[in-house]
Image (cartoon, rainbow, N blue to C red; front, side):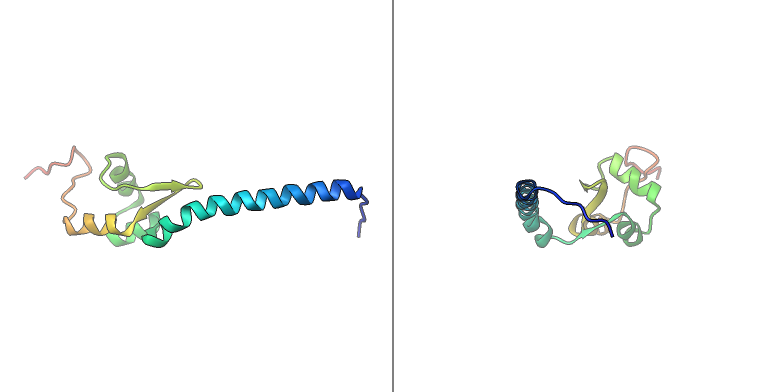
Length: 103
């Protein structure tokens, strides 16, 4: 075991910086907590399973603006209500063109 000795003032300074960082993190988290409590959010895999589509098709839905999403920490999340609305619409979207089917 290695023992490192530092001055009390340095330890106090480090402790204060950690407290500030914790407060900043709590304030940021508090800002987004109501958003996540009001609505159930789904990740890519859950949406693909619900819609019965591949990840590539989901990317096309996102690219064409057919399914809104939010990005948090490099991960996409979708509102359950948006996915349900798409399901209720019967997914009338052909991802190979501009949303019109060839019927």
